[in-house]
Image (tube, rainbow, N blue to C red; front, side, top):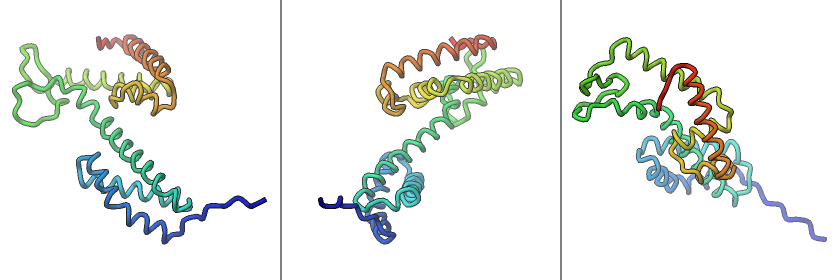
Length: 197
């Protein structure tokens, strides 16, 4: 009975050669996804480091598929972090004056009763900060799967199928998790006197 053929693990030289061959294509791919050359370079370097640290001892023929999966995940992770960082700014973009020509932080400006932008009064600013804190607290108490579904669907903008793929569950489960999350958030906020409807 012939012995099973074992795959030869990549040497340091093979790993270095692979990374040298792939870096230009990977960079181009990241630039298309990120629309920023500096960020793209950072993302590619992160992906290369992850490949070397976690999978550098894999067979050489497995490196391309592993690297592309890591690169895609690194791009997605970066984009998600960026969206979360800017989510509150986007949430309050409705406060921006339609006639504003200068750039400003929407959180620093609120519309007054006559629909003219004016700096937030200390009371309004304080109330706004309290509302944001209450929403964040309500998100923290959601069960993990409900929070994950809610954030992927409504903060990240993924559709039901994409969310199901990312979570490793069915589309029906995503809908159930989102429905329960919406209900729980509404109840938690209503109990604190916040009505976002």
